[in-house]
Amino acid sequence: MAEIISTIAGKIKEINISVGQAVTEDDEAFIIEAMKMENVVYGEDGSVKEILVKVGDLVQEGDTLANVE
Image (cartoon, rainbow, N blue to C red; front, side, top):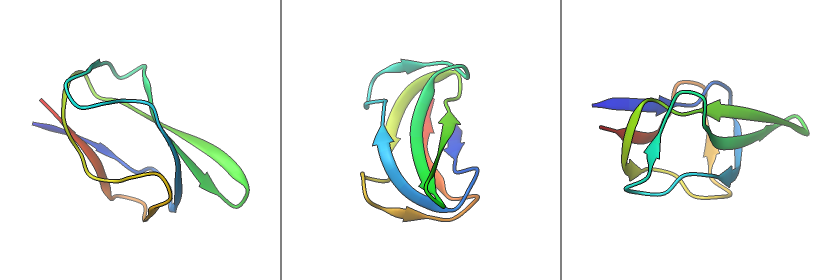
């Protein structure tokens, strides 16, 4: 199982994937707002099994945002 990992600390602004959706490493899975800038977190190849965060959550760099199989 692969994980989509936060690349920066900040607040989840958008979630652009859903459980069961097929994603690739080119898909913009999450948008994280940090220091008034938006940062894109890209997906991993596979199918989304679980999303571990919601819009508004604060995350740290290295946190798991979603599981992909």
